[in-house]
Length: 177
Image (cartoon, rainbow, N blue to C red; front, side, top):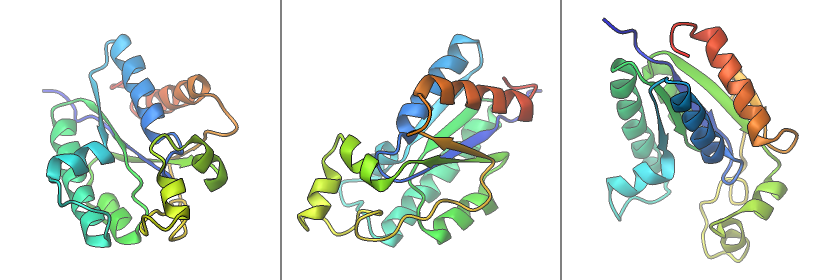
């Protein structure tokens, strides 16, 4: 019988580095022989359907799907990494209440730096009022309270942060990593 895997939920503003960190961590874990998977909020939103937008209810529906997927894969014994904004408190409460073996990572980065990095041009679109739902521009982003680990993508490199995450997982889940 295998033990369920941990679920590391990376929360942070758009373009803060959640997916980049998650991808690098999953590669590192797999290279070391640990089964791991990344679920990206944008990818899952796309799977739900073309009508899935960015309203509070749409965001919550995406989080529900991520919670379901994370728990299923965790039950199979994999380390699960979720990279998702998860900005609304109702979504965060859902994650805290329903995710098994949850570890919250707060990915921190100034909104100005996120806007400079922005590979999809979302901050520029929000500044031109072409989109009205970008957290950080059209609404304030608040970091999660009491995260298990804080990851500052402005102060540390991806490699250093992946080292930090790997050490954190080893400490918290000795049997998994």
